[in-house]
Length: 307
Image (cartoon, rainbow, N blue to C red; front, top):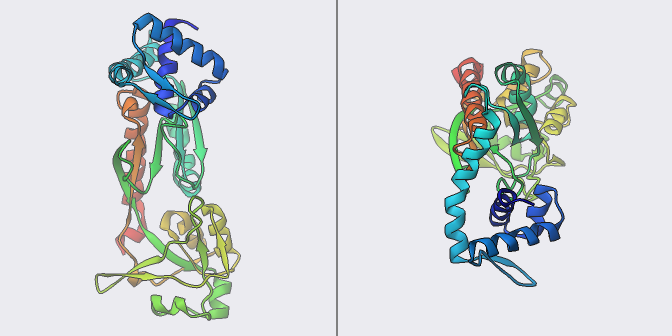
């Protein structure tokens, strides 16, 4: 392994917090990675990492060295990716993680446009409803509904409306609830959504005279993936409470009917998050700008936002 590869290996150990995960992300044997960093330490004449049988920690010299190299590595990646090409035509692998509903309802329908704009970017779309470890899993950026990870840079890219709806067959059988509190009654079955990460089901949020209201119905059926949630509504298993863009095509086709519209809660803010080491990356920058425009279009064309 050459000197530059050793520097990259050291950066991945710092970012992932250990040799095993760094070796996995770099697709190299653990022993090779360890030897390369030892050689780098001999070359520099300083100890970068403290190793023990249980953990790896970064020394003061190692932390200072990492802060100097992380921006340089990002710039080097961009230079190598764009050598001989216009700055507006970045190339290389871009790993983006997002939830199932965002992937199927927002990103994938718009991806032909992104591919036409940036044909040399190989997009790796990680689809999961769990919260990904952006740094540890070597993800370039992730679309999320929160911005509370202090280790990442988070940028708001838009907001999404909520909708409660059910199939015509459900409504024919059970009727239409007149108030959110009626969802607490067993006469109105609700299909719940529980977190793939925590296993918990968050309450349903509504607004009553401008005041937030939380409803926690007793659900006989629950799922932890957004496309499956949509399918349960289409199958008439229960009312579903989800993001409007996910159900709007089915509502327009008459396969679902929106209810409780006057109690619609505040929209959900959407963020794109990336590690500080990625903020100078051309690939990340053009994707962030493109996906921000996609969400802006969604807000402009969403009929729910106009009610």
